[in-house]
Image (cartoon, rainbow over all chains, first blue to last red; front, side):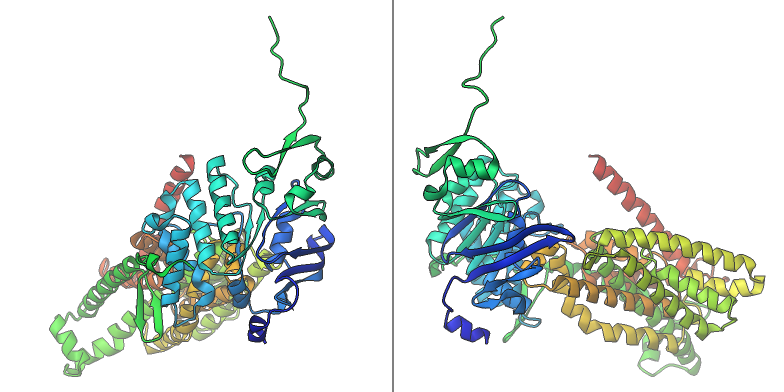
Length: 279
Length: 353
C-alpha cells in the first residue's frame, strides 16, 4: 500500500492538515485549522507567543493527535502509518532535545539513521553516506569525533540539524531552530535551511520567532493568531502594516530589506526619537 | 545528494558486520565490559577455591572437568557453583533492571528500590511469613505478589496524560517505600522473636543456602529477558534524548516506555524472588559503569557490573567473618551506600557551580 503511494504521488501537496482541533487536556489551542504545506517550499510559521504555531507543528509531525480532523501525509492519514514509516518521510527537530552524556558528534548524528535500521542490520553503507553527507552539509565534519557536551551553542544546533538531515526525509520540520543563538548563528542556520530548499531535495517547515528573518527566508509565510491562520503566501505579498497590527497588535511600518528587497518590519517608536534631557 | 567524491572522510561509527548483518558498538563500552567480565572470572575462581574446604585452582578446574574426588565434587557442585551462579545471575538481573529504570526516569536515583518494588516485595514476604505463617516458598510468592502490586499501584499513581512521568514515578515510589517500611516494622514488632528472625532474612537479601533451584528461577528469568532487552536497547537510548525527538525518529514512545518498565520489573522480580531484596546493586551498578564507559546508562554493561558487585559482595560476606552467615545484602549495602553518598555529594557540588 505504502509502496504504491511512493511510486504514484497522489495529487496535492505531500503534507496537509484538514479541519484540525488541537488541544492539551481541556485547553483548546486551535479549532477548524486547515493548512497546506507547498511541496519544495521553505515554509515559515510566525505568530505571537501561544498562538498555536508549535502545537500545529507537533501535530503535523504526529506528536500530538488532533481531537478532530486529520493530518494527511502523502495522501493518507498520518496516524495510519507505522511510526518508522513516518520517520522515513518526515523529520522533526524539536525545540529542546537532550544530548546524552559523553556522546560524540558522529554517534549523535548516526542516531538520525534509526528509522532506516533494523534489529540485526544496524549499520550499512547507506548510513555511512548519509551521516557523512549530513556532517559535510552542516559544516560539522571537523567536529565528528568531539563530544557534544563541549561544543558551543551554535555548533550544537548545527549538530542537531545534521542528525535531522541524516534521517534523509523529504519533509523536514524545525521548531524554533534559532532559539538561544546569536544573530550570526541564526543567519547560519537559516542559510542552511534555504540551501536545503533550493537544492530541491526537501520541503522545509520552520516555526520561527524572528519575524524579519522569516520574511527574508520564507518562500511561503504563514501568519497565525489564536489558533487561526490569518494570512499565508509569499512574504512580499502578505506582510503589510495591517497584517502585523492584526497578528501582533503592533503598529509598524514596512520597508524593503536593503539586502534582499523582502519586507522588513520596523515597529513604531513610542515617540519620534530618543531625547536626551538637558541638565 | 552530495557528490560521491566528498564522501571520503568516514565518520567513526564502530560496527560489527557479517554479510548483511551489522551491529553497532562502542569500543570503550566493550573494553570496559570486557575488563568487568575478566574481573568476574577471577573473583569467581577465588570464590570456588575458598571456604571451609580450601581447594587449589587446579583442583577446581579438575573437578569442573569431571576429574575431582567425591568430596570435591560435592563442595563444588552442591555448594559453591550454585551459589556463584545465583550471585552472578541475580547481579545481572539487578544491574539490567537498574539501568532500565534509570534510563526511563532520566534520573540516577530511579532504581527499583526507590520506586517501591523492592519494599513491596519485602512487605509481601514478611506479611506472608508472619501473618499467614508461610514457609520459604510461600514467602517467595508473597514477595512477588507484594512487589508487583506495589509496582502497579506506583505506576498507576504516576500515570498522567497518557504516559508515566519519570520524576512522578520516583516521588510516588519514595512515598510508597516509606509507607511499606513502616508496615514491615509494625509486623516485625508484633511478631515472636523466632518468627521475626526468619522473616528478617527477607529484608536484607541473602545467598546463603543457594542451590540449583535458585539458579533455575533466576536463570530462567534472565534467559527469557535477553532477547527483549537487546531488542529494546536502541529505542531506550533514543528515549533519553526526549520524547519528541524519539518519536520523530520513529520510536513508539508510550509503548516502548511501558515495555521497558515491564522488563525492568520482571528482572527485578526474578532477583528478589531468588535472593530477597539485595540493596543498592540496581542503583550503583549502572552509575559505576556509566563512569567507566564514559557514556550514558546502558543495559548490558550495567548488568555485568551488577554481577561483579554481587560476586565480590558475596565473597566478602563469606570471608570477612567466616563463622557468621552474613547476608550478601550487607556488603552491597556498604558498597552501594558509600557510592550513593558520593553521588549525592557530587551532584550537590555540581548544582552549586
